[in-house]
Amino acid sequence: MSNYTQLVQDLHSHVLEVIFRKDDGSMRTMRCTLSKNIVPPFKLKEQTDMVSWTYDQTIEYCQDIPEKWMQYISETIGQNPPTLQGLDILVKAIIDSTKRAIKEREGETSLIKVWDINAKGWRSFHIESVISCQVVETI
Image (cartoon, rainbow, N blue to C red; front, side, top):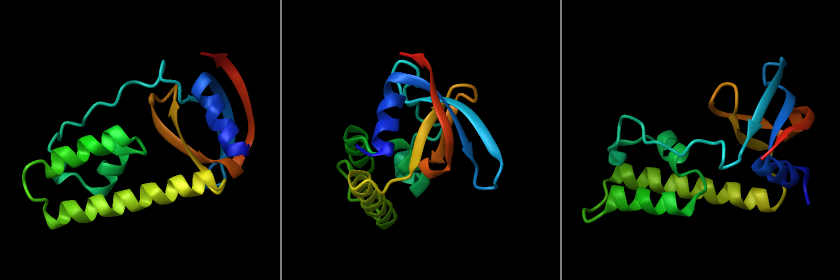
């Protein structure tokens, strides 16, 4: 089992305090988790028309969750023919999601997206930038 896999598993059942070096070289301490008991349910932004979402909005919403992909496809394509922009976004997002899943299985993934307890928002860090990590709460 890779360090990435172990860390993600730990994040699902604990709040961790992770100290890591940011891209700008500064140090950051973050209390974070992936526990469904703490991470709030996803809420659509004020802009609920998925057809006009950008690539980044699509990726943020769908992440790597098949049910959300199905909802996005249903909402954007539905009974109407998709727009070229919508198809382009969908194809790029599916390809990128698939690449991430393959890299994760091969142990090449380094970016971990987490829920920051203090900032109450999604943040990320690269596993190779982690200096220390400890459990601060078991969920």
